[in-house]
Length: 377
Ligand SMILES: *Cc1c(COP(=O)(O)O)cnc(C)c1O
Image (cartoon, rainbow, N blue to C red; front, side, top):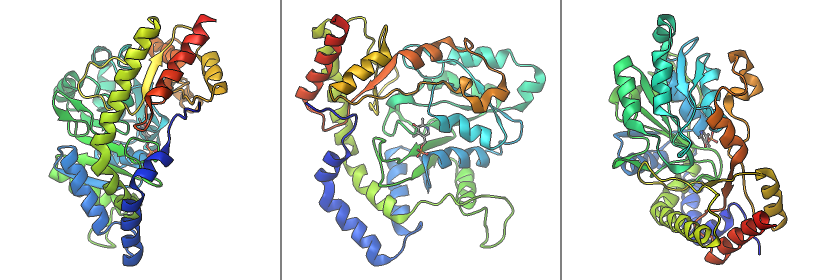
């Protein structure tokens, strides 16, 4: 049996006619950049995420970057974030000349530790405090960070909150949708995300009219009115084809999410009946988890397990093998191994299993059977 990590062809086959219809409309209109398809998607996403506004951008990475710029964060400003994330989170901070300040994660959710943020903020010198501008939590694997304490610290110290919700569209925290909780919500339509385009794309949500207007100007080189530039922006535009495709997929998202959640529950039952008690399954403690990934933590031999599964034609992935504080490009920050032990432990013990909506019960049973085989031999 073959179990890929993701099966985008299965998804495409289920929506092919709808996709061909809307892409054809774009071809006939010859309107490729921004325009009515992008505006329609923005309205739909704003509504889906319970946010006042949404603005389509060129990628999830650019959603982060444009938000940082819109918040006037740059040279030598400090931004608190997690070291256990996809590179874009910390990379977008570094690219603006701002400095990522890492805080270790919670061992159960793998999201940034809120007591850790508090300790870091309280331990800052007055010079550092004056440079501290934002907190950028990541809603990792499809589950929100513990946002209330983050908002509280942000309010006390006058910090902007930028949610990296690239893995979490549809996730909820205390009934609030990911992306609607902080000042900015940043989403990615990278094809392998739970809501993926047929290329790069992303979107920013915000409840602020003022930030929305600024984001719109920054998206087109800071041009307002046309050809007059009070600020420097960039080309952060989303194209109509991607928007049209994401609009079609958005209608199916809740169904796909329900299938991912069903698959997560099936894994729980399968792991329990296999007696694999020393493998840690995802802990759902912060509300609606949309299972962009299903990540387990194993006691030992993670990399050997991964190879063993690969030989059994089971796709897995390690999100992420090297925490940000140990990345070579951040060596100038002078972090060292041992600084964030929970992140480092996660980086060497976690493994993402296939969880995509079209996965069958037989495939899941096969995955768990093989994991059992590995640990019993
Ligand atoms: C995918 C992802 C991004 C970047 O999105 P792109 O669309 O690939 O640029 C940023 N942050 C996280 C946590 C992600 O998973």
